Image 1 (tube, one colour):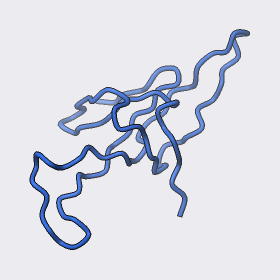
Image 2 (cartoon, rainbow, N blue to C red):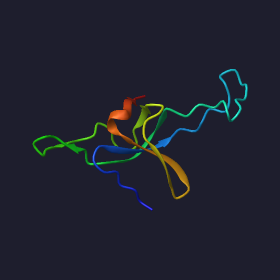
Image 3 (tube, rainbow, N blue to C red):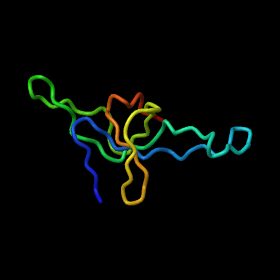
Image 4 (tube, rainbow, N blue to C red):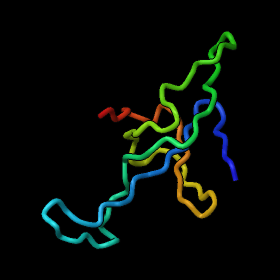
Length: 96
């Protein structure tokens, strides 16, 4: 199935949850935090301004991004857990 976000929405594949601490200790599944980092899978065309002009989204497919911890909606596509969120919920693009 293909999912095409509408407006200023972005589909993100969250990074896997951290299972170990930096020192090598395992974290129980109940204590693992939701990831706030992921890869952009699909991008909407952008929202319209008051004059009907389309405002493009600042991210593109393949970008690694940081997003808000509680933003977006979790969706399952072809058995894979993804996150559908607004472009405003993305705080930064990670550049190497």
